[in-house]
Image (cartoon, rainbow, N blue to C red; front, side, top):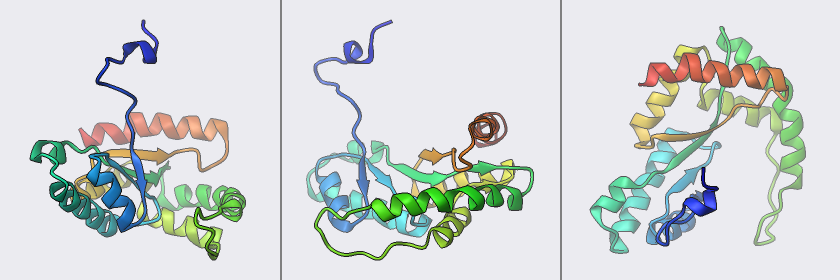
Length: 184
């Protein structure tokens, strides 16, 4: 089996997805025909607006209708599966605020502007409300709804929010066995 670098042809390369959090970053990605990674901190409505803005900028930049249609944007989110929604949310609410606090405190803006740190518990609660956190059916419904509302069909899901290896492995197993089959 060839190594990934050996499998690339002269016209191919590694896939690049641009994390877009502002109209300026959406414009830059669209002009270059690069798909977006849409942050987990925003809901479906804002993600749909970003996709619409990307398409408009891509058209203005002369991108073909086929290229615009084929753009494989990615929606980032958290995913925690349990037999009850409250159990899934509790798992994340116990672990995520601690490591979010550490990560958010270390964040530095590239332009040096000051910013207020998000409250880690409130941010975790927001994420639990926006994303597939709950029963397998609820998780499948949330993923399908996000896809329908935004046009995005690819997801990058943080599945290790519990901070526990065994729980993460079980979460991934359940995602593959109980959620994804409902989306086919």
